[in-house]
Image (cartoon, rainbow, N blue to C red; front, top):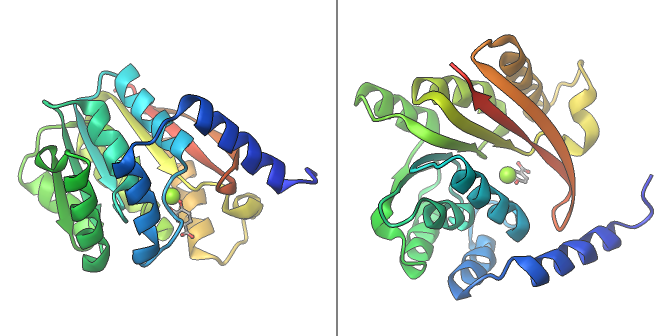
Length: 224
Ligand code: DHB
Ligand code: MG
């Protein structure tokens, strides 16, 4: 066991100071997480930049995000797709969506972001029904029990070559418990099993430590 979670945080602070400058809009968006229903649940700065890099590496122009919160990761993603790119981000809570809308304006990306308020699965189904052009990159970071449903919706809204990233797959280690009665743990285990069983998908999962404690994410590539 690692003795010092403090050391993880110090290393993250060093990495962020060295490689991940945040402008005023990102700093404000991160701090305004305190005005949402889930303070501190946004990704760390170096994780936001990883999402942006993955978008850039995969040439993503169209991004779909489940779970906006204050729009911190949304800003990273919207900047990564560039002026001609597009982000659709889905948020359940009107209170959070209002905070996010203000942050997206401050960051200068509001015109390239479609922020939809309401149950994310319903919004995603509306996108499917509307025959929305496929997304190149999906970030699933909303309520964890719905992860399997969000993956299914993502498969209806992507194409071969698309990338899907799922946040928070560690659940403080509880993810290894096949008998867990925690719906969030079950949501993670089920989505990982669904990914493994789907021959359209190739995936890995990584644990992370740092500013957000002990957690991790799954990276999925849709190959067909
Ligand atoms: C929780 C959700 C998140 O998306 C996150 O990044 C951290 C925590 C949560 O449900 O507690
Ligand atoms: Mg998260």
